[in-house]
Image (cartoon, rainbow, N blue to C red; front, side, top):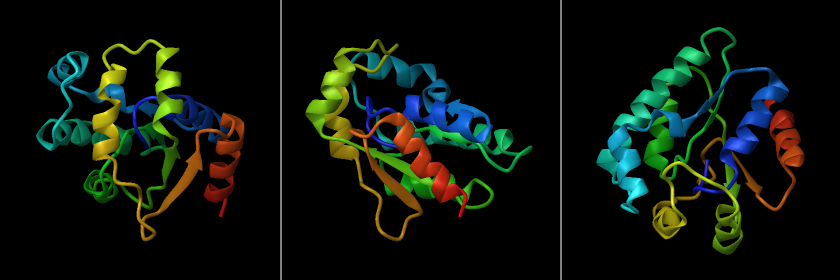
Length: 160
């Protein structure tokens, strides 16, 4: 979880491969209207995000039916979004918060192509972000660490 450009897809794909489960990219579940809004630098509202979260939760539930696990890259910027996913999935849900400063993320975003997410929306993402509270099942990782280190830390937590 985290703002755009923090590495959710990269870390998620590596983690899914490491633990041999299906990977779902939350971006794939946004309806066309959400993608249009973001492509036009219009931040999403809660009303925009609920149908997306519902579609993603359904896909995550289906993906985890076989093994009981799946990995998803999802911004989950607010606690209410994380609580929604927890409520609609079986078993515990571990969120991995990929935390970094705005300048580092802007630098990363300038070196990648994204179908619809411009760097102009990063400020709104940081404004919306509610970092996980201590009572949430969440592992916060700095994006300055290599992907392999982050994945190893998550695998270690999952093994407990």
